[in-house]
Amino acid sequence: MAKDVDALRSAVRARGLRATPSRIAVLELLRVESAPMSHGDVADRLASQAWDRATIYRNLIDLSEVGLARRTDVGDHVWRFEAVADGHESAHPHFVCTECGTVECLPDLELTVRRARAPRAIRQRQVEVHVRGLCDACS
Ligand SMILES: [Zn+2]
Ligand SMILES: [Zn+2]
Image (cartoon, rainbow, N blue to C red; front, top):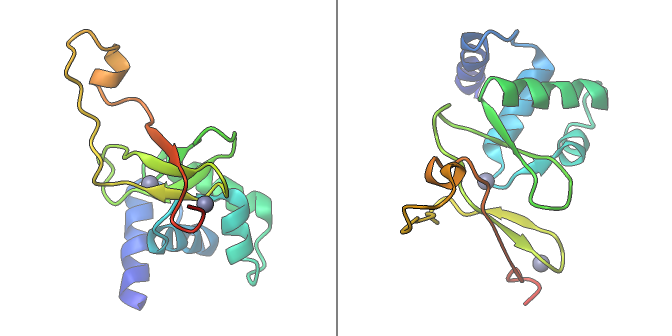
């Protein structure tokens, strides 16, 4: 456990950020969770700590800016954040439940482009892919 925290501290420092306790806790939480979390989700989970919500938001933005996290908007105008294991990992598609709004990662789903004339953003994978339908609990 302590070793993991050390690894998080070095990852944060290697990207030029100070390894503050709140920043480390935010990154640790994102790495443990398997689905992207909104600022509200993160703040609720860390509510037992004394950090205010603005600090937690700032940490999420900082971690995203240095590539340790990624933010995504699945179409409901809420930023959700998830950890990026290695800074060069490309974005994966997300599944969004049209009934309850649950968001799940789909790391194994690959976007394949067969047409050469697709927009450059698609060819360079600079797009976000969201798949919509009913989740297991709602179907
Ligand atoms: Zn659902
Ligand atoms: Zn994801």
